[in-house]
Length: 226
Ligand code: AP5
Image (cartoon, rainbow, N blue to C red; front, side, top):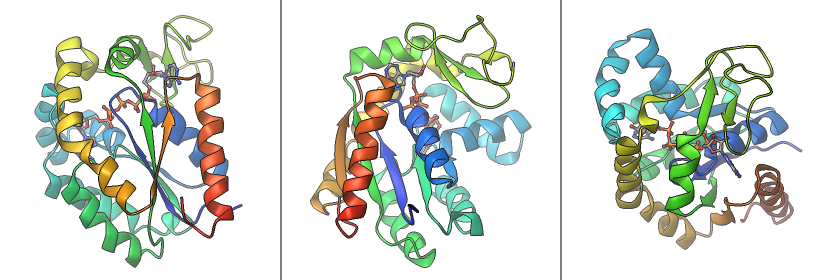
């Protein structure tokens, strides 16, 4: 079945948004749009956007809304998003959420579905300290719970695994602070509109995936309401 929606993954740093977004995007054959990945690419390429975003990300703060919106709007307008899109790490502020609405209407995607992945802070800190990401294909590993077969090497493409600079404990603390202050209020914002379901993100990756699949299938059977 086609997605034909924007599916938003909300949740704190390390909740598993990237892990789950990748799976759902593959399942429905729609683009996976991660604003964090887009900023990291810009930083790696040394573009003007990357130069602005780099110090902000290294502090664990959020990139200002106008910069984020410009980047996202340009991407969402491309034809490959017309059958649906998975949004990972966006929106993250009330302003971003409100400015997303007319963009989705214009793209013919209507109201989004929002999945809030809930995980307690102490679990998140452990997860982020164990995360390694493939520098080629972006596959995500965890030395504690989902290690690669050979240390430091991606199982799929042999790419070198790297650790993110913003996974240092002092930056993780700031990212969690930014999440609770600026992003967590979106849970209530979307819940009030009947667009949000919460899943328990502390279960295994497979169990979380199954819970998300059930939410989407239920919504598809209910004429679009979550
Ligand atoms: P971004 O890249 O979006 O980072 P984040 O939201 O902090 O989220 P993470 O990528 O750290 O975690 P995740 O939830 O995707 O978890 P993952 O699946 O990797 O943003 C980075 C920065 O960019 C921001 O701080 C900000 O500066 C800027 N930015 C981005 N978007 C922005 C926006 N919209 N506005 C303003 N600024 C923006 O999993 C984490 C680890 O846990 C992995 O090792 C994984 O293997 C493991 N794991 C996952 N699920 C499970 C499970 N169920 N059980 C056990 N382990 C698990």
